[in-house]
Image (tube, rainbow, N blue to C red; front, side, top):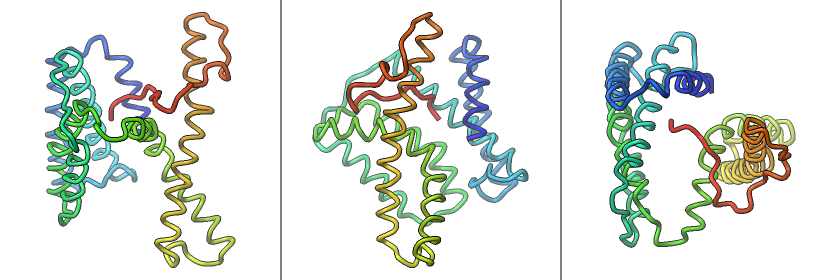
Length: 230
């Protein structure tokens, strides 16, 4: 989350200066940085230690800048929505098949530079034909799950060991399913009851409004909290 906060602060300061051409340069610089990081560290699973901070910075630089570029391009040229049946399911199955391939540093690089951006660009144009409300709910949960899953799982794993007197891995897949359900429920509750109302209240304060956080609570699960692309 250090990199997440840092890149948002930098973007807030430079957003007005960051033209499309300059943004493209940042994306290209981030891509080169990722290649260098792979050569230096031998992996792109970096950023968690002091030694790999440079690699983590390159990861967030490329991913964040690419996310902003995808958003801008979609806003400038919306294009035709993809309404084909099973389009979303086909995209998800394709990603699942890719993730079954043997992992390596080069595999990670290709995924970060090509697979993920292309998947996001395709996904933003798909209009789910099946269960659109469920798809909206998944979108609503995606960012809080990303932010909260590690600390929540660590807390749950510690509680499990204290109560059951055994490692959670010894009771897989039961513990895995339990932890996944816990993360989803906690992420939904914390986002709906705390994060979204607080964001709305802070925005109201900037506009000079008097709305309280409780009054700012969203009415439906389809309301996605405002988050930066990353």
